[in-house]
Length: 342
Image (cartoon, rainbow, N blue to C red):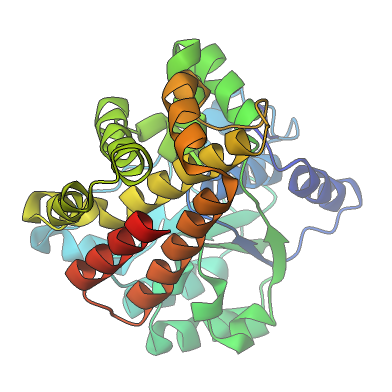
């Protein structure tokens, strides 16, 4: 049922148990961070529900189940998003957002389709991807189906933001939680299934923070460039003690071309600072960026563990400020002044 899907062993066992006892709920809620495989697991459950061989993954039924044709969400295709998209299997449907919203017409179409008996399988399965993008009108339309679910239909809501769903929807679904995939599992997958080199796989696994989807799609060249810039920040703070260079780095982070990279750069900076703290405290086997150990050792020797811990605290404080709409330019300047004086 879940061949080829890595991580989330507990979720796998729970879902398999549902089929073993013959009690697949009419409504499931798959929650967890972006890119950890929730949608792929939903397809796996769907295959198990419609395949006579128990979700073998290799038969024509399983192959058809996972093949969807979904057009670009531009204006000329808006009407397509007002209905359920069926895969090549007529008992498997999916609702996806049009731009930023799931259209109420699509949920109403799901309600209608869910009341039809299966065409060729023993059950029908409908996946609502990015379910948090239902507005109140769409969510209330879905409630009608969840309150009186047809016996032969199952609905799987997939979301990374369950708190944005109506409490009445959450209470009528059985939640299955998915967590980040372990870095070593991501690394093994990238090498074995995606042809990554060992060095690239390790770096992608570190950067993705448990998101297999992000690891696969990551632009490693761009990531290395960002990491080099953030390593330069730590070197300027600890070795050169150059406040002007630090403020220049803040200016660069705020340039229009780097707008989308501001917070990812903070993530990289924090990872590097943690590595410096570990090395300064005498650790070595637990650092994330092991491919640049020599550079980190130099910075650790100049900074010390206490100062590196102060950098981490300053980064967390900056994130808190950004959450309440602190200006990024002010945030970057304040952060790097702290770095210089920490």
